[in-house]
Amino acid sequence: MKTIGVLLAVILLTVSVPGCARTVDSRPSGETGVWQLQSEPSRDSTSIDIVVSRLECASGVTGEVLNPLVRSERDRVVVTTPVADNGTDDGECQGNNGVALNVSLGESLGERILVDGACLDTDARTTTLCDDPVRWRP
Image (cartoon, rainbow, N blue to C red; front, side):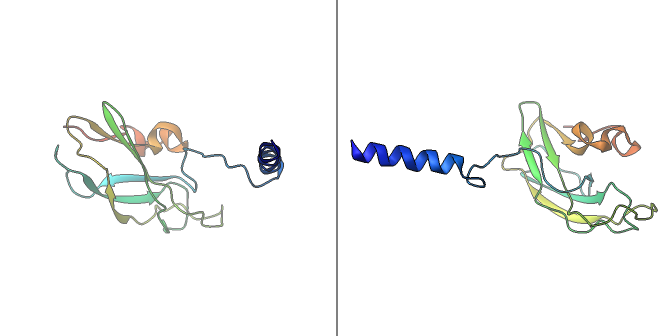
């Protein structure tokens, strides 16, 4: 009985101490990056070669591309490519360089479309870069 009391005390302490509880956010951290295919995939492709560009004005520099988020769904594969915060909000808007990246999909594309996730649920969705969020159709 004493063991159960100690166990409950540890659980309550862990839950009540700030910083011990974790929340998992399915949205990528960082700033918005949009991407285009660097080479055409096939139905058998298990990875894609893309070029990522920072959406925000950054004086021509995309910067570091963070780990991409790949979400496999029944009819589509959604790839979201966040970029690291560049520490400024006052960059010039001449467009930013592209950063090449190979993204593992975890399984073949098959008959699914390939979609830029930034075009679905970020500030990119209203830009001309996202007129069509689908980057590939089988």
